[in-house]
Length: 296
Image 1: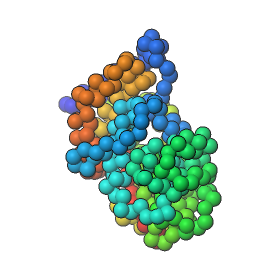
Image 2: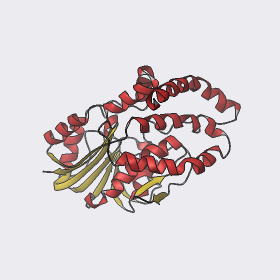
Image 3: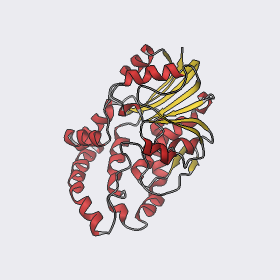
């Protein structure tokens, strides 16, 4: 019954997307994204501060509640597995650096294909070096890294197997590759509650070029020379539903009303933290994948 209710509410919310731009203009707000864009730059000027909660949950409050919810899963999972980050460490697809800097006080290399993102990353003191590269080529010597993080990056690549091969080249034998990535399940969850048209629209806006099943990623990692150490699917269907619904309360919606997001946060933050805690415990129908893999 709850699932049917979510399906009805989700489709009704599609209609509200039509009036969101009008609402923002009426309330004097500026156009903003729902929390994702091509480079991964964070939308909004809120300081990036890692907050910790009982049950080893951590999050950063971004300008978008939806973005906060999504990123909290990744922050929590990576924080729980930080023992795998050996030096030298690289953040592949670092974007503006706000994610990595929230977790680590020092990151040896921030790598991105967007000069604008690297310019923004320069403001993050955690990054020792910033390197302009591509999804298949990074100008660093073979075997020069102890660990590489790729957080919500590989879905944006058009040649994921070539990207994995480059990560394997950069890592020394026994080095660790840690990744999070949305799966085809993310598209299915969106279609379930909001319809396939909305699912395709969202993934197009998010520049998701590679959405496959978890088994495909495991096969690609093995072919690239990795042994999987930790494999976890997370973010069940209801989590994806609430993630998408929170767009209505972002800075591109009702969130332009002064202090509304703060009031909402004060009311729902315990539930958000509980949802994150439940999500990262694992879900066989997860929309996202977390992997720690060792370079053979």
